[in-house]
Length: 195
Image (tube, rainbow, N blue to C red):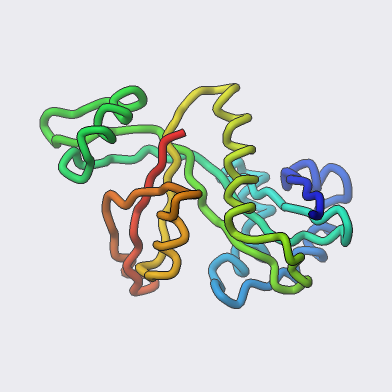
């Protein structure tokens, strides 16, 4: 099994410089999700410098290539109490404020903003989305230890394959709402997980 390192984009900028990193990222390819590809090529560096979100590169030790990325940030989230099971309400109440008027919880959640493979490089046989999610949660675990928190949130297109992946027994996300984006005319399913 290959070894993989997770590298913060800011550390990469410090190590090789912004221009060199931009050149490397210009080859990033994610044909299954053009939004991720465009983010990596056009926004990842700027968003990191502005502290909007931090992108992490998963690097294969054997090839030295970036095989995947994920981007993390935090976001205030409102969750209607009717969207949650009794168990989820109990867990969420440890991290959230409940508003009687709106009958919703407000929580500061970790957001997995981007998540995908780099198809510009050969994908190692032992690398997959479950392992990428493990890397994301390793990083979130370090952040949680420093600042607290316990809710992770993401959105994905209303796609059966994606939903099955995020809600499987390894990833354990649960849908709680949806939103429709007028910009890209797409319905997104909102999912959360406790950790």
